[in-house]
Image 1: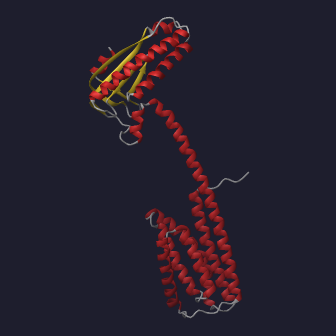
Image 2 (image 1 turned 60 degrees about the vertical axis):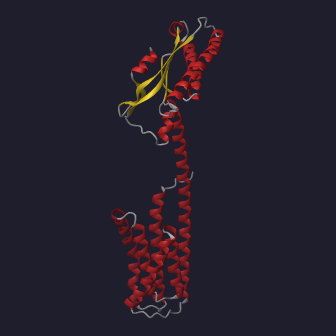
Image 3 (image 1 turned 180 degrees about the vertical axis):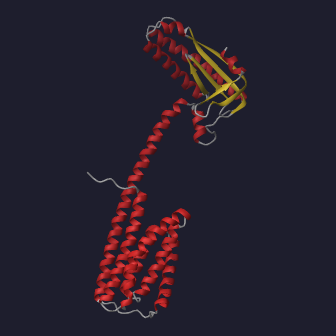
Amino acid sequence: MAEPTPPLHQLLEIGAKHTRMLAFIVAASIFAAGIFSKIYPTRVIVFIPLALIIPYLQTWLHRRLLKSVPTQALSITLLLDGLITGFGIAAAQYALVPMMVFIAMLNATVLSFGSLFLWIFTGFFCLLGALFGGLLLGIGHQPIETPLAVTLVSLIGAALYFGFSSFHSRQQSRALLVAKTQILQQQEEHFQTSRKLIKYLPPQVWESIFTGKRDARLQTQRKKLTIFFSDIKGCTETSDEMPPDARTEMLNTYFEHMSKIALRYGGTIDKFIGDAILIFYGDPTSRGAKEDALACVSMAVEMRREMQILRQKWQSMGIERPLHIRMGVTTGYCHVGNFGSESRMSYTIIGRDANLAAR
């Protein structure tokens, strides 16, 4: 069984810390090989422990910078890397092979974590470090010949560094793929949940919420609406004579057919109350008071036709008492919006004309 991949931010932090530490270990090895080959003076031995301490100091500094200047922490750290690399080149007396290894490791680090613009600035800081280091250490600017031992240590160190960097990049790629898969799974879960939740809201309402036209907070406004109210005459008596499952199936079939008609004409389905339906026109979208009223009446006419078809279907199922739909339509001013509390609200209408349509 494969081991779980660590989170991406942990991989980035661990990888940056370890690659920087490995780069300084390579530098310390080069200085040790140079002292062994007697091309560097004995005083250069001080750079060996210093090269092993600096990565810890930089890690500490980077964490402090993340707290004070989080957006600039990486840039400052990389610029400091460039300055230290330049100083290391000067300490290595500008020997060709170590110098090329130092520059290659610096480029790999900067291009992995920074931008092209930052890469240019880091190179400039590296040049400044090399010049300042040469002046401070009193080292001539003429490159020395690189002994075989220093060359071998430099090349082996570079191979180890780039090998580890490649391994770290592979780990990053795996973490990115895992994170992408998790994000896609979460998006799919949220999408499926949203599809379930939107069934509890009128399509016009959830569409206006998702597009940002409406906010899910307590707010109402007074608007001119056309209100439609309907119920089934004799439904209570008929339902009492039916088994609960058959009654539920009959009502759900009725609501399904009537809802499709209401949505086709642009009506906002407010609620189902027993066998009654409350629908209104004019919010959250409106084509004008006259057009809304005409759409509502056209919807009511089609609902009557649909009820004739459903009545024949129910009679064939053994419901002997014919069921008829009763309707009330009126146009007037109502308050429409979100009523309730911050924890539980309902999008509905309140007003005298709403009561008039129901009665």
